[in-house]
Image 1 (cartoon, one colour):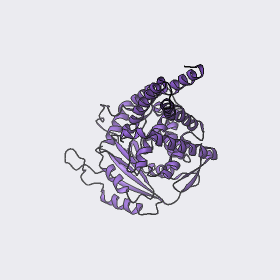
Image 2 (tube, rainbow, N blue to C red):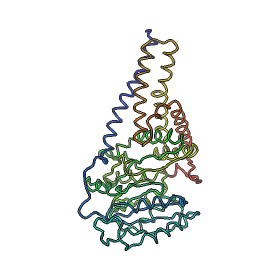
Image 3 (cartoon, rainbow, N blue to C red):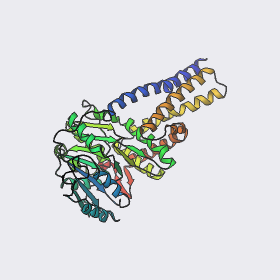
Image 4 (cartoon, one colour):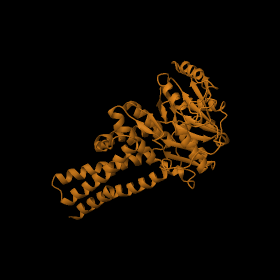
Length: 405
């Protein structure tokens, strides 16, 4: 092996197989920090705190019933529901009003353990017909919802989330036992079409890695925190002390910024894996993915391009390089190139397969990295463009990133 080839070879080994060994170790450490909820043994206290569940909905008439029905089926003994109809132009408001009538306040509880006449969870609908200047819609809807909430805890649930019956009980039990003030979870990523299965698990895992999601659980890192606003439990006292959604009223990733605000105020935050407790259907086609993930990536980065730039570099150097090395070996390169490329491919495919598995999807999609990785690079490039321009398009609105950073 000549000097030049030796330099190229060992540089490839460092950036390929060795990098994935290090990455596997870091993933295992981060995963250990985030999987404590599944194995938690804590039960609810003898007198569980009352929880107000808040569900914002804008033009969700087609599936809001499913979400609310799942919310009402919670086995938690003490909760009320506040559904916020945020300026919907479809039949969301009518559907919610009908459901509120159907879920009476004093009928026997379907979750009662003793068949007694325990009061059924109250459902209230708040209708919002305008958006004040300086606010983003979801922030305003949730803030107005909390004005009607009397619970000791607020449980924010997006209208496209499907909760398991024990979700709230598990989350409150864990939060109370660990004395956490805010708890958010990842969910199962529901997928139907090929492009969803191919891209969403990889994009979600990239976001969690880029922004060190597991560091949310490290109390010694006050500047590192993220959240998933789809499922977000917060102690009401902590929420009000940081001014809740008013403090992040113009942030395009209000969930992340709210968790960061809470952690900087010395409240105890936790972000855990919770796919056994909830599932969510996200973006269904590529255009939604480009704009949706540009909002998430650029917003979480607060307009900085460096997290996206470094991720693109990783994908090119540590992922796509395996195909270059393999092609070089097949074209007549020395045997050691084949060994290194083979080790690289196995290590990388196993780790990527776990990403799909952990999100509730087939790990076989890891074999399609030559397709999914270039698409992700394109989405990251689009995110960089949006971060530089400072303008994000989402759900028909133009949002300013610079003003909200």
